[in-house]
Amino acid sequence: MDKPRLDKRRHNKKSFNTPRFSINKSENTLKNGKDYIQEIVGLLEEFGIETLKPRIIPYTTRKDGNKTLKICLDFSNRFENLIKLYGKIGYVYCKEREILSKHVLEYLLMKKYIVDMRKESYKKSLKMTRNGIKPMEIYKKIGGKYLSYKNIAMWVEKTNHTFNKIKIPNNFPNFDGWLKGASKGLGDGLVWETIFSIKKVNAENLFDLTTQSSAHTFFSNGFLVSNSGREDVDVRCLGWRPFVLELMKPKKRSVNLNQGLKAINKSKKAQVKDLKLSDKRTVTRIKSIKPDKTYQAEVVFESPVKGLEKLEILQDIVINQETPLRVATRRADKLRRRRVKDIKYKLLNKKKLEMTITAQSGTYIKELIHGDEGRTRPNVADLISNKVKSIKLDVIKIHCD
Image 1 (cartoon, helix red, strand yellow):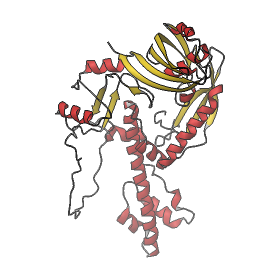
Image 2: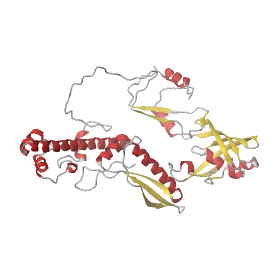
Image 3: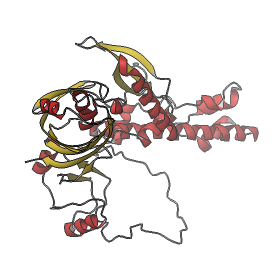
Image 4: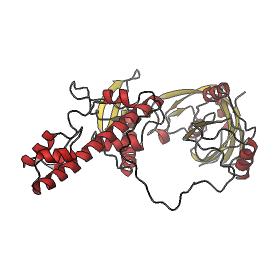
């Protein structure tokens, strides 16, 4: 999603352009892209966020002659809608945009507060007028910085002025001017707030929420996991996988790692070892490495397996892989070249084959086996002329050394 952008018109620095989310798709995967956009629209509706009708525009022509189209999803730029967008969705993946969106959110909330205040004052003005109170007296009672005498006089004297036409006043600051003072001396998207009132509240009980486990070690505003690549949800990792867990703005920094290690391993859902505090160098290494991986696959074919000697062509070979159909809605449609470094195979029965494959990071192993309707070339299924019925896949080693 693009970052918040002020309206470029010279005299309008208080409004923002329509935010947009877009993806590029080739003509032959356009339907997948449209389906993906509709899924996003559905998710946004659950948050009460309004979008406009998706648009498709020509984008570019690739070197191979394939045309690429851009699918654009625009958001309604009503400030009430932008408050929901930046308040509930945001840009957690990009620090710069996250900070900007926080500032925009606070500015929009201020606009909403002023508009709501003026609407409430409008109703009060009409009520006081019906009680015989003159506009100047009304102004003295409820007027202020963002509510002038002229506003009140216009409201009570013009019968064609409606409640829904009430907007922010002309003296409301533009975004740049407001931000300069509101964020002075602060960072991370913080702004100064004005306390309008302090009231005593009668509360019998005050609770501090915690967890039953004594191992609730980390309290943090967020966390980021880097774990030497990722696998499909149905793929087990039977070997050890290096990972780094980064805690953003932790409220507790003194931790018992042995206690955490025991708690994780006790769950039986995952096993970890050598848990220790890391340093910047290690974090950088884990994030940057692209290790080869060794997989073990149990493959069931539709027909009896024959011609296994043809698989020798896959030894230490570079294969071509187009973006798999199963991820086409969320991955760029492009051609990837990956090296298969070693392949071993053993026939378990006439239709079942066990394969051990070592390949370059980023290789789509399932597609290497079943071919993905010809989008991976060469592939196991085509080489032995046999369609794949099912694949059980495990990672047995990640070569990080």
